[in-house]
Image (tube, each protein chain N blue to C red):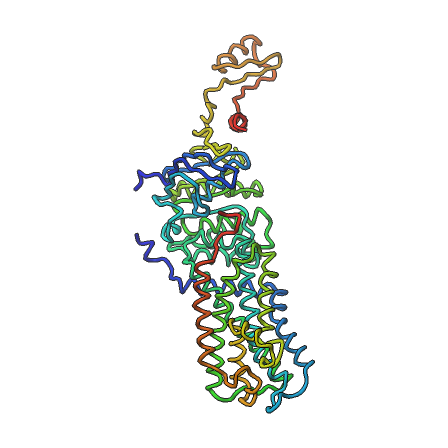
Length: 279
Length: 272
């Protein structure tokens, strides 16, 4: 069982009328892995997640999520999933506490709803009606509802949109604890590259409905192999061995090198290059 | 897997859904006020406008109207509210969220129907209260009349609820739902002899059309429970036709269920 990937996708295709959203996606998520799906708006991230979660039909391709076809899955399969999608506006008249307690009831072995509310930092708002929450607080409620069922596999579609920095860090801690302590497999989409770098074991970049790159955050798009750029007050130079160049400069200046910086391309630079080629 | 064995039952989840539905309903104050007010205001208005008693009986127009309005009240609260409510659930992501958790679909419908039952009971109590205090309606003292009322009420609510569920799929969005649901309701109220009394004086083609739908039979059943038999002369036929009422309402319950199962859409038109 543990040898099987949690998610296995081959040749996934989906079109909305004449618009091709997914043009043959291959994707694997190993058990216990945290995978971040990156890509520009309209790349097909949400479509992919919604097909995997059983909310959308596919046109073609093989999809196995926890060994089942999401298009023909049953309630026992759903009990193993946690889903945080975008664009919900429901539950407005209920309080945070009522909603999380209610959704816990559907699952065979739920987490303690009050603990989950604390984990997403909403304890102070537990008695508040959901329509009175801010956008970021509402999103945190979505995350709480998504994890209260103790899922083996968690889908998070842009979970941190609208979070303040503190809430974002709290969310990162939550994801790390789900993955580290409970072995939860997590597939998340995000536009925040620092978030992807902080949380994900592996990144998959899609653009125009295709996978354009994948790899660990440190090596994505040949990031580790790219030459470093050394800049100082009187010049700059790209090099494979920045340490040697800095040592050489230190000798030349007989001490401190004025304005010295050594940079490698950030994940964001690599990412923008990758999707730039596929625009 | 042990997880499967411990999954909560559909009946229990249906009860929890009803709790959530009721809380959501009663917290929207303006919706609550206007849902209950509509049939009450119409009963009070029509009851005060019309005057006199029907030939051959001592039943006033207002008294005749009261049980009919109970039927129309159930139809509007149950059919319109459930239909528009489901369209709203589809629009705001409620249905999508519920489809993402291990909820047996029937629990959702059980929740809606239980909510409809409770709201109907309140509506009925309010309408009968107005009938008794404002229009001297006498409530029956015998068990048989109340039993008649009971089974007509139950079959009527279930039929209207199931039809509301089925009709919810006609509405493209929550915003259009109110308009979509109200037209069939208003037309039915007229051709079922609710606003136009007594029903025996409606043109025959309209009565025939009205007789195809549950509202006419619910109203007739309630009149049989609350009015003396001397009013029978004003009915379409000179009998309360209990057997036929049961038959038509039961047929609509079954037909409504079939319609629900065949036409219900969990997804909005954009989510294919």
